[in-house]
Structures are given as structure tokens and as C-alpha cells.
Image (cartoon, one colour):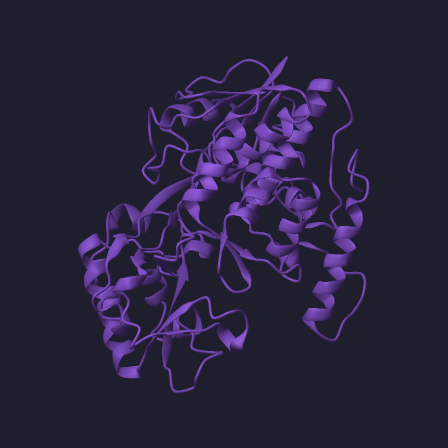
Length: 424
């Protein structure tokens, strides 16, 4: 007896591990290195593309709380993230190469997991978890559309990466906002005149596939910086370039976050973009500290696909009345940690289905449970969702957000004492 998992990304690897650790054989299908999606280039499993940040490490942040919930469920992916972390202030960021390598080694060394490198265009028989991510191949999408109906999509974008040595540190400084953390970010300030010149070039720069792009939907969490800028000249100074928490003399501040363990590579925080490569070099080099920056990876934009989970799935990520589960961004969750969580829930319930035991659900007082409820609740305006405290109901009133979030976090973690059954 075995369970199929299609897709060796974050959700698929977590699902495969959780199934295998329960003594059940897994066939894990991954089309790399036979075929790559437009955004992938690494042969390893669990390759992360857009950012190397798993977001906040604090449990008073919803994503930080979700990570702690997953730690208590013995998540392989969160364990690997903790072991390959790089300095990032109050966030959990990883060396993306070391992270993918560690996950790959864990998966391939597991005797219960068989990794099959081929593109799946026809669903295999038996219980199957589809965790092919937002860049599912066209062949498999056609197969999926036969069982789900209309395909949905939005657009996603990745930020550029530069070498640390090419950043002009005479025009930059290391610090975290409000003096918190260990000065893990490189900050590139701009005067009002410098920002206005940068802004004008940014909104007029050439983009890739503009006609197709204008017809698409944009997910707010990965809005291209040039599109954000077009909303108004001050949008960026209240967004990714906000100077708050630093010296008041700065009009705008671009932050760079460490991207690898060695600290030689840094990504431009919030600079997801659809600009042509040459335009990225030209415009982003107008940031004084990046005038001579060496761009080792330019930002890219690509189509992300997800199903209408609110009509199709139950809170265990099971396609109703079938032996098929969905996990990862194709299921309507948005973000690395959220994808891992969906893989966890789908795996536990695929095992329950195989063993013909009760479904495993999580309390809506937990982030993992509330997120599962969100993707499975009918919603005519369904959009992918990140972990956030807005998903949780609160039975008490508090004067401030910190006290409220501490209460919600502690209440959530109290649900993880009995891990053998339903977490209600």
C-alpha cells in the first residue's frame, strides 16, 4: 500500500515525509531535472524561488505562530529551515541552497519514499496528493481541469539578488528598524531628489509581456514594485521603501536581506518586478548604494495557478468525494509556511483515508485550522490567503494588539497537547 505525492516542493516534501514516518510507502513524483518550470533552476527538491524569508519568527506574528504550530507537529521543512537560517533580524530567513539540499537528503534517504523524476500528465491510481505548486505544468493542468472545472490564476513576481561586495557601504548602513535585531539588514537610503528621480524612471521603465500582464490578476502580497509605484508617488515610501524606524533625515530606504549563509548575496526586499533585465539594471542602479551593484539574479514574473478550493475542497484539503488531495499554493494558500502547513494537513488525512480512520482536523483557534477553514469555505471572491490573525476569532477584548496577539498565540498552542487525533 502506498500514497502518491505529485510535486517535490515545500508542500509535497512535507507531505511525503509525514506519510513515510507513519510507515506508509510514498511515490513522490517530481519533474525536475527532466523538465523545469519557468521559475526553477535547481535540481534539488524544495527549491524556493521568490524570497528566502519564511517571515517573522515571533509567535505574536501569525506566520511566526504557524511555524511554531508546525514545529510541535514535527515538521521536517521547518526543522530544515531552522538549521539553515541566516541573519534576518526578527525573521526566519534561510540559505536557499543549503535548505533545498538538506530537505533533498532527508527525503531521498527515507526508505519509505521513492522519488520518481518524471512529468505527470495523467493522475495515478490510488490516494494522491497534488502539490505541484503555482507553476503546475500545462499537461497536468489539463488533467486537473477535468476534475475541478475552471482554472484560476494570478501573477507572482520575484525580487533581484545582488552581491554584498558590490554594495557601496559608504552610501549604505546596517541596521534593523527601531534598533531591533542585530543589524542584519543593509539599508540604502535616498534623499527626496534621488527618490523622485528613481520613481519617475521606475514607472516609465519597460516591462516584460506587458499586454498579457495587463490582462492578468495580481496578488497583493507579491505586487511588482513598478505596479505598486503607479498607484501614487508616495506609495513606496509608505510601503517597501518606508524610512520609519531610521534617522528622520532619510526620505526613502531600500532594504537588502541576506540570501545565503556566507552572507555574500543579498536580495532587494519588496522589489518583486516584471521589468526587463536591462531596465532593472538601469533603474535599480539609480539607488545610490547600488550604483555599481552586481546583479546575480534579476527579478522575474510568472503566472501562478490555483484551484477554486472554496468550492472544491474540505478542511482536510481533500477534493470532495474523491481520493485526491491538494496541497501548496495550488490549493489556495499563499506563502512558504502556509504551503508546508497544507502539506501537513493533506498528508495526515491521506493516511487517515488509507487506514479508514477519522479525519484529522485542527481547531479554528489555531492558524493551521483557520487557514484550512478559509480555503474550504464557499467564497465567490476567493483569493489565495496568507496566515494572519484576522482568520482567528477573539473571545476577549484587549487595549492593544500585542496583548491580543499574545493571547491568541498562547490559546492556539494549547491545542497541540494531544497530537494523536483531532486537534479541537
